Length: 287
Length: 348
Image (cartoon, rainbow over all chains, first blue to last red; front, side, top):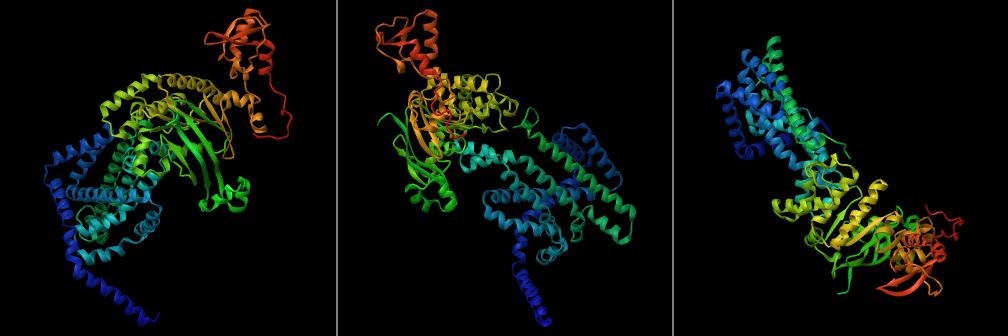
């Protein structure tokens, strides 16, 4: 392709997308409004509640998730330190966006994973899309997202979700496909419908994998916090970004470590919760 | 309606990408190996005709690869046949819609599997209730009915264990209770006891026989073990390379094996435990001895006769004398036949 042709080609794509943005940008923005309201509501809830109440709820959640006193005490100590070092607001904002992103990823990702497990054709179509989502540099898809939705929470949330959703989709699909064929045949032989097979057999037996997927999704969402803060998401990413541009070592390390603390907490709690759902694996000889 | 419960008529199954167009070749008599060599298709079932009588145990036996597991999966259509028909109580299974088929599987035919196929995440009681929960029966009733079946297979006390906490034999009891709990008339048992060790297997056979005395189900039992077939089967069909080579009662198969394959098959079994005195009955007035019912097996008769010290026994049926049997005849009948033992043909 000649140089002029190439320039015209790129220009054509840019312009047509710009037209698309002008025509449909608002509609798309409106479509995501409920998500925005939910995110704002959650953030306000975290920020406006008195900190002892937030602390107590975190401790309760950690305890009921993991049933581990050690982890609960560790969580309390970490959050006290975060508050003492004046990172409370940013941590709450990050917590809010991670929670919403996780909810979105689970509620979109698990159904897609189920569809993929059901048909090989869906799997062949979806797999390369997931590959692209995981490997394409985040900045590339930030361009159309920002063009469409501008700067703010929703585009940030979208960017996080695009990056974080593949593991949950993949592992749901894998988990269902790995369910023991003999058990599936038995279920079929007793006349189970598709829905009965899915709910009584496939999903329960795929839970360990699905949980590994949720866990990975949360981890990947956390790793996007800094990039998301570039397009206007509040949270721990903002001070990190400021630390990079101003070479504030302490500020960067402190906020970075706060992200690590959140990641470890999410990971341990969700893992031990997932394990406890699998009571039948604890004892005896597995077949 | 006759007393035939399940009727399998000229059933063919060919595995491969273009099975439908191969059926003609097979019907013209192409062999399994030729079909595989020339067309790359595998002949699974070759013109199988079996009539299963109501409330009887029909054993289908064959070595691995003979198509017996394929055959049993046709009866509840876990596998679609290439051609043929399967009539259960006058309804053709193969013309059922998906919904009708689900209904058939839920309430008419339940299945027990070689590898148990239990739900590992559910407790014993919930596994037994699985068929009922699929039928949509409310939880309370399902659990009550399941408890009854857990008791009858001897698992009381293990209701709240998970399958992985049980031994193989106990797991298969759960499988059996699950199949019985749906109250289906037909019980399909696919090598149900083959994964168990010999003692447990014999135990389970006794459990099945004693349950059958009360329940009178129509049972189709797959096995590769001839002793098991002889012990359980009212009727036995022997399958080889997808075709039935002989069917009939245990006695008929032992006394009149259809070909060398069957002869070879039965040469190692304990005939005294299968043959009844009626099969060696004669009318020799000179024989005196204890009275024996005509349906007593030779093993038991020998014991009675030798204890009495006589040279034979008198056979009675319904209180009337119908014939005699001599000690020598009984011993001859159970002696290992020497015919064909030195043949070059090796089947296993």
